[in-house]
Length: 109
Length: 115
Image (cartoon, rainbow over all chains, first blue to last red; front, side, top):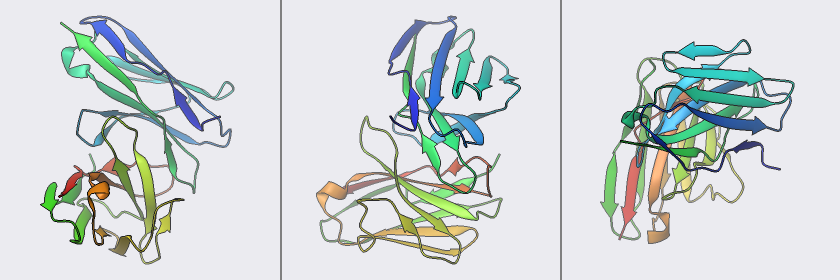
């Protein structure tokens, strides 16, 4: 089993749709969690950290379920500019970050 | 937010040339820097992790004599691709982290094309 798994995608959604990304991780000792987005031929950019209580940043909501070892990212009212690959990232203190394979999102006009 | 600068952003050179890529953390001290490689339509692949003042830790399958990493200060790490060949053509990205559970911040990446 891979350390971090994500929905295989791609997701093709119309503008204004709500889209949810799922991510699971295998290392129960993992301590910090992040969502990154990567545009085509660009570097990954930090989208948001994921906190145990869940957190929201504008149209983006991230949630963490430690018991199920599951992380989610919800995008509401999707925009064309949200089109990118979304990477789930898991870190265990003192060890390297582990990146999921990413889920590609295309928001269509 | 934290800024990581990577230079050069694009390199085209002949087979056999050695290429040096710099990664700088501009507004924070990076205890750890990471080097990744990404082929088209594939995931990021971690090549090595470097901590300031110590030898880099290479991932399995990555030749340390081929990819020389130097992390001489808390704000600078360099990757040298020695005697590059066409199969080394890829997108190389560095990232830096302040410490522990802090997120990584990525440089802009270097697109390397070996003719």
